[in-house]
Length: 232
Image: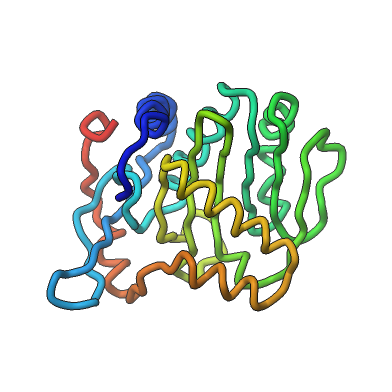
């Protein structure tokens, strides 16, 4: 983890306050599994099941955990009311349930950019849509907020082949470090060029640990979840 800045410390406290209501809202708390490297080898090991992981560490998350973090970042953007918000949706049809939410954010923010494939939604106010059919980009889940004083990002990659949203599993991290957020924002904006080499460079810049699905499923199926209050 990079040395914590003052704005990072303030954003972390704000994030925890925004996250808590979403964890209680879901029928079951979003689950995440810690991922770390062993000291004596490069093999990835899976750790304890947690409700929401620590920032700046790679974790495997189900869709509910990733969605809770995404909504908390969006709420921070709505509270700050300036800056840029970037979000990816594997297909624009997945964006439609959140259309009003993002239109409201776009009224106050400097820019709201939504990535996806398929038919671009109509009548969405000030939202900028970036259309892509690149299969590699469809695997990523990104929600990034960048303003003068507050920065936050969630970056995940789907690790299984599930098509139903509820069955999808992601490996990734979230962070409030301004240097990391701005680096991801700059590099991700280059992807709009659609060049294959640019996309390959992006994937090399933010590599995710390789996981065996049989090891992953063994932990994801666990039913014991740490109390939300012990995390937030």
